[in-house]
Length: 264
Image (cartoon, rainbow, N blue to C red; front, side, top):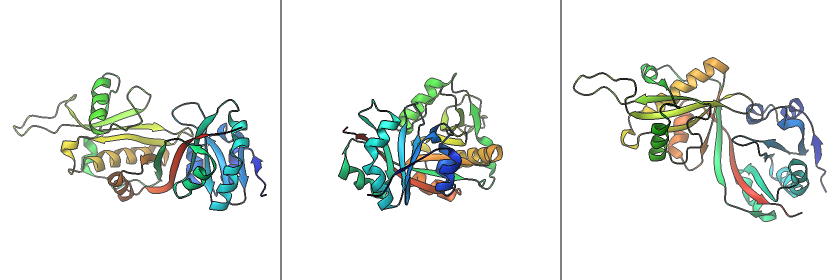
């Protein structure tokens, strides 16, 4: 049987993964205190919205299969009291998970990053910070109407930006607090990289380039501030994928995340 070894430390995990961008920008020193490896694959801990840890398994088919076979032992080290926890594997290897364990419903998603600013565009000047506390109800209603699967809401500490309704045809000017036509949040990953989330465009305004404007403007801001911008998206969203790729993002990972029942 192929051995599964335990590793320690972020520097060594980065070395084992070839300085993989997902590891660099999603894993902290604390999370990398303990990880697991076998020839061709690694398993490491991650967390985002909650402090409850999950496990990501990355590598080739043989290596991933070996680490999945060791999942009960890995689970004992991550959280011995839990009967089920989330495991993320490359989407094309998700059947390996189902062959071994009882798997509950989860999601398929993709992770992108860029270190290059998109070209400047005059429309970027129309993207303005918005007060997500004072306008929390409005932002929530906008997301519910136009992006109900958005995983970031107002008041969580992210910086929110918006595009407001254009000036009226009668010559009236756009005023602060005008109705929103697009929003997005700029937060950070656990490793403090800028992370773009909850991009939403008024469905009645689609086709006018508003998504390109707000994503382009915030990506430029993030790259200027930190040299990188990251984002995640659900895999069914082909329109968003095309937009991100056209703005210079690289699709780095395609994950299947599933709650897995671990029998011990």
